[in-house]
Length: 393
Image: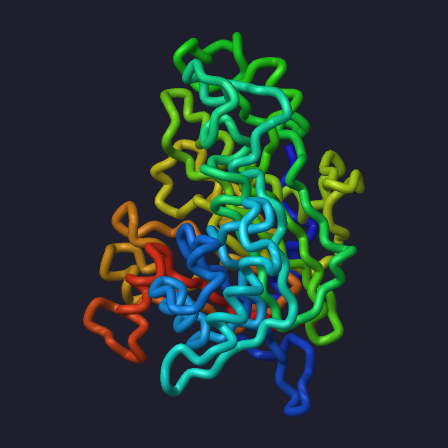
């Protein structure tokens, strides 16, 4: 198991000092650190039909929030991948959303955002193996959504996409969609015949271990060029740790999906990407982890991967987490989603060498009507956008 008492501890201390004093970062013309705004937004099952044409109410509400916050790098969770779906393939859904909604002012006083650089990676959701397997052990093999590599009614369902004002080298993007769960050392896979695995549990057979993928969507490393520095955007959307059985199959799966990027930034050598390149990030790499991790702070899940791999891991800055009035009204000021009485599942976490300047969850209190964000939040999603201003050095 990778040790998380990290080689980045000193850099983290420097980064925290810089955030407090404003003394660390790339100098701009005014002598202050420059920063980029990174944001994650789960837009909840935004479909091809909704984004390929203008006029959809949910897409408009999501676009208004994005235009208010104006992130430089944005990941949209649960935006369908139309190329995998086989619909309207003349342009990607992320490009359609940018052209039809984000680049067009959605209200007086707002300005459009033209994201020049986009990425819509392939997702494991709704993708069936070449041979039929009964992954969920319901007696029916090879059926969507439960026997796909990731839960989805069709290939590319619940996928995610990235929109950026900063360029990136597409040939340098690393994807880990085909990485096998069994190839992670000390994994938590429930395997048929093991002690404690019952016949009515969800588990993997020896044959299924040879094909079952770790990522329920995909894990992606995108190297952005920000202020002449490379910052790796690390994107994923692990499976929810629910909807399973007594042996906590999805909870184990979520735990190891969350763990993957913790191992990746620690330089773990067991990792390989979809091109066959092995290994994790270099020691001196800068990165920002972004996405709906389906892992929170409440500790009500027995494996609690967010605490283990985020809060107690020196490879991520967690000294100041984003909050909101809306979350506080539900009893959790860190909450990023309405379900579960207010759950923190969406994260934007910089590496310790970067400077976290400010962050927030876009969730006004119930009484607040400032700029209409309260109403837009309810229409756009049951998640709330999370953003952070992060300076390079």
